[in-house]
Length: 297
Image (cartoon, rainbow, N blue to C red; front, side, top):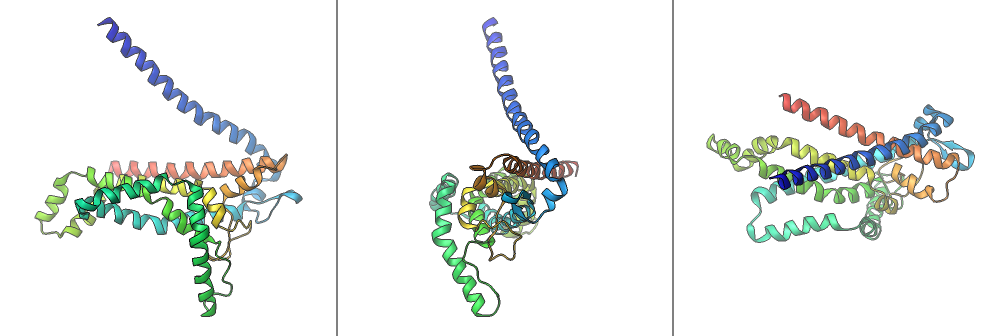
């Protein structure tokens, strides 16, 4: 009995240390970012830094509004393309998929999560960029667009990120749908609902918290993705001029210039990381409030 009690206390200590290590890691990241980023914001000026539309480090001009807007556009585009496809695919796998093809389909969706970002980037560079370039040229010939662009654009990055967030959304949404008690579906059918109506009017709303969590994780990956976006987005540090034009995101701005940055330039890039970190915190906070409201309801 004594050895069992000692083992339990020992394991409790191990778990406590592991939890403290996780909290400490987050705390160290926060301290590093804010300790190095906030002074740079003060020196540049919070207003000039957050709302400035010109980024010219050689002239000590640091305005990240184009990168903020670019990140929002690309992330919103990824949500538009990825979320509906992901949710519908999860519904198909949970309620419609024949057993013969479920395992291959499940394996394929899980394989998407294991593909490196640079491979996605190469795919976008070789396949999506020429495709979007040709579509833009066709629209220009029809008089719909004034300038077609070269294919490296917001639309291309949104399509690619929409593909990259699919495995996260599909996996978590399917798990959430399967976790809903079968009585929900059976009760809806017993009351006269069709198969589709029972799924989309009863089961899917019941799994809303899990679906929202899947979307949030997908958004987090879309905002934080760097390599694939660098390869297909055009990396132009200017205000977005249309979905067929190039753009630079916050993450791309940091990666592209951190290798040779020094002094205020380096601190401005760290301050860009602070802004990105705050975006993620705001998203998580909004989701926490939404889940809390759902729990009260």
